[in-house]
Image (cartoon, rainbow, N blue to C red; front, side):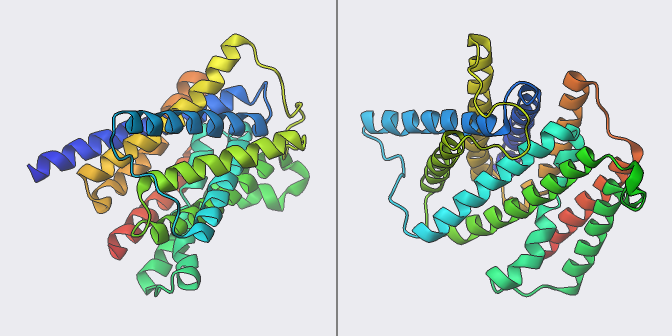
Length: 304
């Protein structure tokens, strides 16, 4: 039975990653017509609405949804801000880079966590973990290609900005993961999910009211057509679906089992990138991605 549960958990997790990759592909597609602020707003607003309806439905049935007022409010705030900034920088990176490139850079985050853990979680960093960080960093250097920086006169500065946004996204994703580790033993999953959705809604609505967008030349708010509204709603729906599926996956399988599977996210990103944008990563990006993935899996295996 335990083995069967593990298999079910892995299968659910694969669909989780497909859902997230589809959301990111749709966000990239929409970035031609809408600002990143508006797309991220849609991601959190409709996600929040779905979660809210779920909580109300549970209460109507007389069931306990698990939603509670946060016990560690400060950590919840910092975690939610980190998730919002990760989404914002990552979506900005997606608007510039290929799906595969942006996703590979995001997966540098577990290695950033290794470096931040001694400061934020008082965890000891082993020599093997440091070796993994060095290998992962080498993979990042290969993806970026230092020749493009050295020969700055011929460098595509827009592409380089996409790289920087991607690294910023990885940094804030790492901070989000650290916050999750602090909250996991104390808060219910729904409490953290509800709080992060609500904070994202407030944050992105504020950006739109302030008429602010990080990099887009588009208007911060463009009134969508009915078809475009359906696509923006789908961004939020896929985000919510992925969050609910991930809870199901972790209820069936251990984190150490699912961690290596998480890198199939890159495979889904490559598939959607090819189908929708006719884009495939080059050999250099794949090689760098292989080193980053290998270092991440090795780090997780050594620390669990």
